Figure 1 (cartoon, helix red, strand yellow):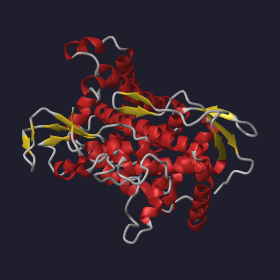
Figure 2 (tube, one colour):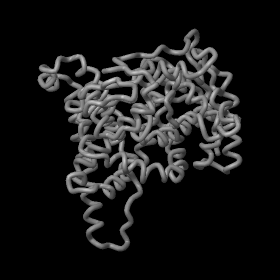
Figure 3 (tube, helix red, strand yellow):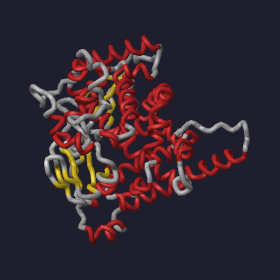
Length: 424
């Protein structure tokens, strides 16, 4: 990997995929031949479906996700009425899985096996990527037959296909029957089916495979970001009441949960952005593979085959002043109050100083859904539960593997159901 300074961001982000490939870099970075995410090299069906189907429909899914998250909390959290109970990173991941399951395959939204597959597949992909990167190239294929995580990925895929492929075939049969009473389901599986441009993309097993790869970002990375924000909510409790007040005001104005409700949570958005600035999911970002020799405007030559990255965490840390090391949850809220800045400095936005979601044409297409999911999750936690660390504990330290930054999976969070939780 060649680490480059962010003075080159604007020049590099304009280059086409044929010269500087985001997809090739990320697939190789995740050891795609062994983690199975190399299916992404076969086309951008998933990106197109997110941009044209999911993002425009986010408003419609807000009430459904809110309904699912309240139900999930009641089922996933241990008994905590009148008493403190312990949850961990894995607990939050289970909640995020429920959010994604609600929109991924409608008939399986209550299927525990499907939820478990969507939770375990991303975990196993990360394990394979982390393990394979330290194995010499000549031994990787042999290691792939030995590593339990590699076998686990294929079991995840096999089980997912057995669950979802019959649903694809049934839907195709109904579409071909000409039955005027048949209505296409409104879920991500159907969007992938509708957007598949060729027979190979439209194969049932290929559609299921893509759906699981989407869970990699929709579940695992979203969970990491949500837990980091939750750690900060507890570490800096002075923000909890102002955030609750903002949530209640937005709900009162909208008469319940709507897309506009989430856009009104500007303090929450700022808090999430500040949390990510200090605890991003990866030290490196904007990964690109140089597909042909490139000469930059100042004469720097990037040879073919190099993988370049930006040090996104150091760049984000140094993007504010004074005291860039200090947590200021409402930093970006104040920035947006400046004339002409009302629509800037948002959590889902990218620029040369904030590249946790990438930057330019190939920014993470699912970041808007992730933003909605995290806001809904944190809002319900703030309104319905008391939160704290165990006595004597402070904000947990991060766990790093290569450039990846994980919230401590063993850290305990104490929750207690509020005596009078807010119920919109």
